[in-house]
Length: 341
Image (cartoon, rainbow, N blue to C red; front, side, top):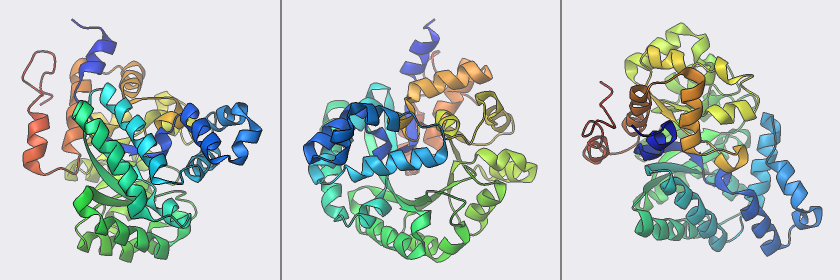
């Protein structure tokens, strides 16, 4: 039998909740700072390390903002995309839906299609090397309001033929309720985009309810606080509406006080469809294999349960059924990956 680490490393996996900008490693940020001669250079590498050691949500948002400020050219985006996807492929991630902070790009005055050309070039290089399959989700920032979010939705729709398949909102739930984005999500739906939202991360279960009932999302980012409402958990399980679970992220942003109190085990036992994800792996010092190992050690997951999580990550993906079946067919073909059902 392989070791636990070997078993996890060999599991075919999908990553559905990972922000491109959150994949920028400290060394890469320093390289970008020197390339563009930003104020961060004067502060030194110590300041870079401090950015990557935040322990609360506002500190995380500031770190994320700083990374975004250092992305200025298509070449920057190609550089970080290649590095991020190469790391994913090394963890046996076969498929990924990578979130791009298009709302921040527009806020900075960037030409998003031009920046996306850099992203596409980075992806093409990695795809040829590893075969990893990637699609993209454009994310709007709650705090920027519905008009800015609508611009993100239109931009995403214009790039559907380039692999942009989804639209969502992130940012601070406390500062902008989901209700104000009702028409934006309706527009994105008409454009044929898949819908997701960060919800139940820094706000209570009512935020998840609103994302479901008002926005009509197909997947929830985090859903940490949904566990406080038994009726909500029941609905999530019955509808098989997936939750993107991000363990280390929740701990590092301070929305979770201790790992053992995360409701992952409760969700599993109640039949909620889950996927394990890294969210912002560089900022939180993790990767997907570590998230699986953390889940196993914290909640005592069996190999069968870990296989179930890996399988569920593909079931929760925004993929056509026939393509999804190709990935799912890897499960159940050997004794190493027994089917979870």
